[in-house]
Amino acid sequence: MARAIYFDHDGALDDLLSLTLLTRYRGVSLKGVTVTPADCLIEPAVSVTRKILDLAGAQHVPVAAGTLAGPNPFPLEWRVDALRADALPVLNQRAENTARLSPLPAHLQLAEWLSTAPEPVTLLMIGPLTNLAWCLREHPEVESKIAELVFMGGAIDVAGNVDRPGHDGSAEWNVYWDPAAARRVFESEIPITLFPLDATDQVPITPEFARSFGRHYGSPLSDLAGSLLAMTFGCFETTGFSYCCWDSLTTSYLAEPDLCEFEDVRCVVLTEGVSQGRTVRADSGRLVKCAKKVDAQRFYRHCLDVLAES
Ligand code: AGV
Ligand code: CA
Image (tube, rainbow, N blue to C red; front, side, top):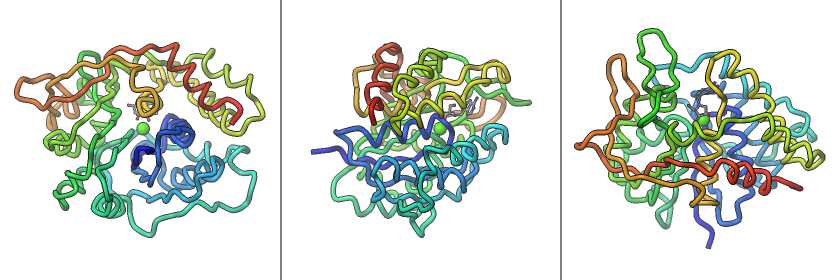
């Protein structure tokens, strides 16, 4: 039987590529999508999410828009990417959007989905953990409904990617946006599979990877993937950091669990001061299954294989 997944993303280009992959995975039954207003503008991010579900024939999957925000906003230059993606021709072949929009805000919808789930589910979260932390604070009983949390976030033995005045650069953005939320989730007993920068640094979006989708030009989901990847270029030139397959690597774990090698790490989340949002090794910390080493070529091939001719 297919594994039941609830998916929370935050509308960046990599999040949209992840959604596209997820709709193709045979062993996955996508039950619902929540969007966190973090690395995006929420309106175009929800709109583009529904268009991707439509294009992939997954109109039945409901989408809920997030309203809760963390204390450390993303740069506006990054948040506008969803506006651009929402205008791509491949996503605008029809005037109407038929994918379902939930009347509830994301945190309430997630709590309802979890509390009514007949069996424990997998949560895939590739933005900040704000919605889940709210559920755990307000409805602690939903913790038992989560069999596994697969989360892109943190930086264990490598530098972070936050470049902000007054911060030491040791944090990764998804944790930094709402450090208290990450801490709350890490203090739970939910089994966590973590994809920190230690792993995702190994899968930068290279010109070869982006251009490889050209061979499948004319297949809607391949066009979409290639366009999303092309739109990430310029990142290194403007930030000094490569745009990586942060979220799509994390998502691929649901289809190819042995693409990465893992290490069990005890860690805590720092919530104050110049290192806020840092995930740091500590003997007193909780155990997480942490992705360490990636077969990058196999990952790139996986993306192409999954989306080719679709
Ligand atoms: O820190 C990685 C997370 C991932 O979930 N996001 C992007 C991915 O969706 C934040 C981020 C870090 N650097 C970025 C980011 C950049 N240069 N552009 C956009 N987002
Ligand atoms: Ca993200």
